[in-house]
Amino acid sequence: MEDKIALAPCNGMSPNGLVSRVAVGDCRNENENVISICMGSTSADIEGRNDGMLRKYPIVAVNGCPNGCVNKILENKGIDVAGTVAVNEILEGLEVSARDPFRLDSEAEECVEIIVEELNKTIGKIL
Image (cartoon, rainbow, N blue to C red):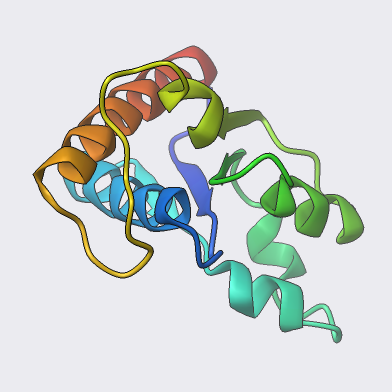
């Protein structure tokens, strides 16, 4: 059993990208065994300075849109993910949605809560 898990949020400029980042931050704040990964630094690291950190703990990719960029970036780095949370798929068909890529309204905050719950389930399965 691992003692920590890393969450890698979407850094995209979509409403669900923002939901992804806030949900990862909230989940990290609620769980002392959770850390987060900066995907900008990860994708820009052509020298491989982050490789040791990326292999230290299991990683859950948290994608905002159907493009799955978080998984693709990690795959390009040779990193296998322990799990994937697709924000767009989880929120699809629900009566709440995020609409702004820069600000959360009350409905988007509900989306964050839904994703945090899904992250906690995913973490529970891995740890």
